[in-house]
Image 1 (cartoon, rainbow, N blue to C red):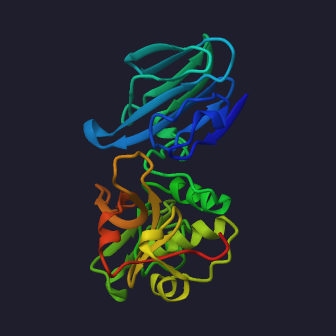
Image 2 (spheres, one colour):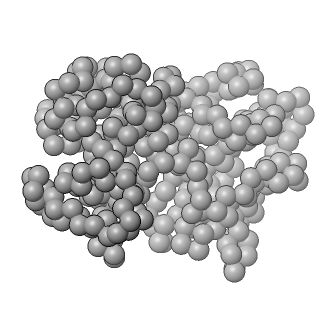
Length: 300
């Protein structure tokens, strides 16, 4: 049975049918198979040209033992790693981290009891699996909003002067958006056929996708119009806003003691002159900076 299911930080395995076992980490794993549950959490690092470090897990709620085989296959080269591990009845078992290279587009493959279950090329990793930094919200609408935002990871930044293009509209010709006309310091290139965002454009589209009434289209409007909450009470999906920027709070999904945010910001200059914009960043600076206030979107 195929399923896409996330387990909240600190959830017990009993919630998934294996009594008495606590989840071994705080990551928001995505489960893509049940009976037994098989899941993974993908963590993207930039070393060696880009690698996903994949934590794979086998949560066995059945009455018999099951065996997982996790492989990484590199096109034109062959098998890079091949691990096998078995979970007894009622056991949660974690495999070794699988290093899936992005540039050669390695395949991540999982079989259960010798039956192939999943094969994902590195360039086709579903957004919901690249979520090691994300804590799960109990709100369906927040999860829907985050699913849209996380699907835009690595989209380019187009700046505050991009008009409708800052909301993800795809141009048919290459455009240059002059951010100096609205208080930014550079002109942003947007190639034909490439979607992009600015900070508030991304947030607006996230909550629009989730079906939430969201009339605020700028960080100023969000700061003045969305109810403020204490940072001590911040929850996943809340906004951290100052005049000129907004980020979405993701919590501490990987349990390293550092919370994260999802944001659109000019992060990396690319060889083609564009800026990678939609990224997951450390939340510490936002939480400690008094210019940023926390806001909870009504209706979530």
